[in-house]
Length: 367
Image 1: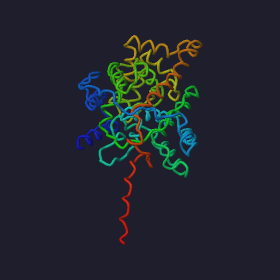
Image 2: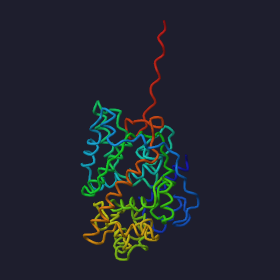
Image 3: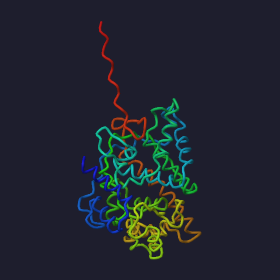
Image 4: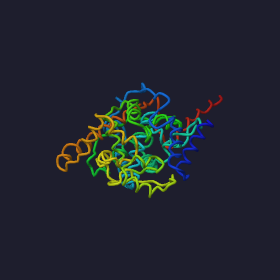
């Protein structure tokens, strides 16, 4: 318990204390369990023998419940958010599914055992969009026919889909299967163990994706979400970035690095979910080592080059349009990770809290 609290506190300091970039990164390496970038001293957790996702259905709430407007209500909440928060919702879904599966464990503020939750783990301190999920849940719970019906895990999956649709100008449009249940457990330490780090090399990144049932292509496709959102300056090393952009980042971040400063992950189209990310990877203008490492393997480089769609006409017809389709498929596949059933989960009343245990029945009346 004490060790977990120390980890959470140390990680939180990274976003608030000004320090040299090399020092920030060395601390992060140790928290993740690395001795040097790309070298992991312990084995990655093997794939889980989790429940099957066969229970999930497209249109689940319209077909099987009294809440047919569930997806519409979530969509309205997402539509009212800013582009930055919409980008955060996609990242929130990713961070949820990679730890204990897609069970809304990332939304928990408190669990019955008192252990710091994923939300308080170092890699998750910069997550955004919680208020959108809470607003959607509150709107659903206010309707008599929807009260206690829609899981927070499904709300998160719907929100990520709707944010992807908006930020891609409607090019990313896929059906979301639903019927998930919310988990009971959440542990801050697992954020360092399960989430692919930004400084990992290709072997580490693909292995961590594979542990979740996602293949090499899924790795490349889902990495394209770095086309949106922002990054803390302490999460990358400008020495490995294309010099012109690297110099601009140094001016913005400052030396020593101000850990509270953030920059767009895609310096050209920061609020558009598009294939500019792959062009940035090609030119050495992607922020993270995990992005740059996609060019180190013939197979992943081939995918990057294809999705980059450098030809204005043929690129859009083939590479860009194919990435939109592949991104939707990969999001659906990720949404199947370690799905909870009614036996392993619950429908939370509030997304940040596990439901209280039911009250014991009153004692029998004496005769």
